[in-house]
Amino acid sequence: MLKDLQVLELKKINITKNKAMNKASELPYYPRFIFNFNDGNCFSTGDLDEFEYIKEHGNDHEITQFLPGQKIDVSWVNEDEELEIRTYSVNKIEIRQIKYDLDEPTYGINMNDCSAINGRKKKWMMEIYVFLDKIEK
Image 1 (cartoon, rainbow, N blue to C red):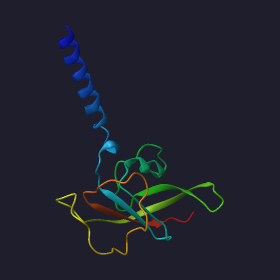
Image 2: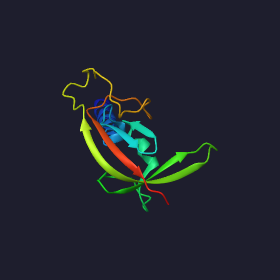
Image 3: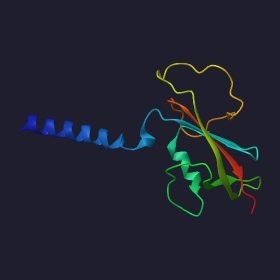
Image 4: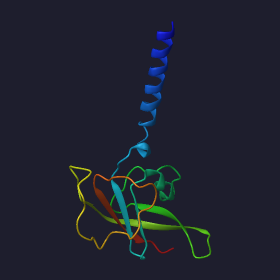
């Protein structure tokens, strides 16, 4: 009886561990997204939870894709510490630094990269650059 309870407890632990890994945001690695805005802003993250600040224009759901020509809304905190939503159009997308070994160092400086990375620090498998143009209202 005790052995059966121990086996059930181990199965329960394994199920709990497997459920946690079903969320992409829980992975220890992810592609790093670098959002390069033509108004001088830059936003870089490998933490999918940071996507809560980026929505498809006119939609409040989680964003699931980036396409050239697509309009997106980005939430920023302005100089007055107020939330401001700016609309951008995806100009182009580039994929760089595809890594076959996640421990492999990255060499050189990319002028399109941000000076800081937002969100949880993770190893990244590649860098996805999304270049955006601000849409004036």
